[in-house]
Image (cartoon, rainbow, N blue to C red):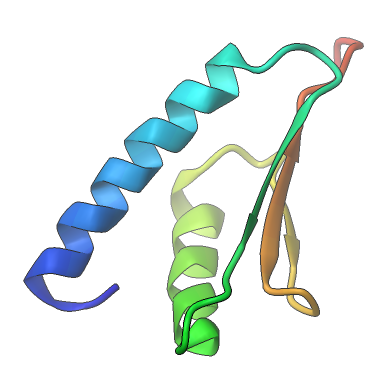
Length: 76
């Protein structure tokens, strides 16, 4: 997730994620979990990105190094 290749990979992943957020049905969710060899580093990078740039409805779990988005059936 660092260096020249990491930035491009992250940009592709974010674009795909934003597309999924518009396509999922009400009542469905998206869950991402950092499970790479350097999962602490990966989680730190993604957490910083999510807090700064993404929808505030994302739930971040430090315990499980994961990110969770739920598309509510009801208007919030």
